Length: 416
Image (tube, one colour):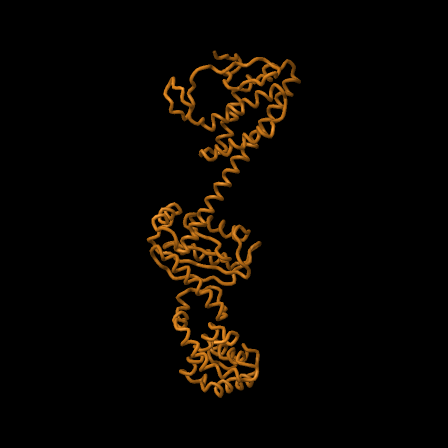
């Protein structure tokens, strides 16, 4: 039978009183088959019921605990708080928002307030205050544990999602894995493999570390300005990599600006290179490799530019396609400079700076920090030792090409 209190709704079955606990007796659950949310068993079936809805289970659990607290005035135990955290996790996994769970639990508690045993049996106002304070303290602790569990599940889900995202981007950059599976994963993250993509790679004075404040700031800024599904950023081998699809070139531009800009907790990038746009499943890999090659050439050549595009340095892959021929050019054109007093380095620097200064001697001397007379002496030594005159257009091109080859081959520090 169901006992109804004249001051409130019927007391819920299942809130059984612990043995030996003082207070009025409580109604037992109605025997027989019960209808459990989510159960598929037919009426009268003896099969085990299906999983109970998290919100309904949370309501029964909270009311059970509060009924016991109203009788004893005790605090919630550690195991009970952990049970509520577990319910909060399950609620998050089932798609329930924290506000909905809290509202559901508080609403049920408010309706059953007057039927709680300790409150119903209170005789004096002091007893009523003590019992009410104990119940409210238990409610506060219960809802705090519920929120902890819900947030814990949310953080875990976010970490798992981010881990899957990083793994997918890493596989995309490596070009590995089954294409069918890769296409399915790409659809989940909003990536269209058939479209064109451009990859930018930023390198700092120190290796980038995932999770650092500066990287989180860049991600937050980009996600705040663009659709989160179009922002594909990952830390790979100490570099920061951004993949921008067609039509989202503003993402790439914003990424470059943010990485180069000094900010609290973020060391600005030394250089950012972008590959060319490529389409298809291998397009991301090709653009990524071009960006890496551009960074490598810029490092070897000591280029001052902080923003580089692969198409600006296409001449160097052509020059380095035949390393033996390049080494032969360096050996024959620049090899005699090693006989100069002080070695070949000052003369190699002179050729480089003169080309950058447009072959204006006064500007070349200023950039080198030497007098025009000293510069004239160096140019004469270059003509004498190599047989190539920097004032001659053909000789000038040969010297410049040989110097670039020497820097790419790290000569004379590394023997040819």
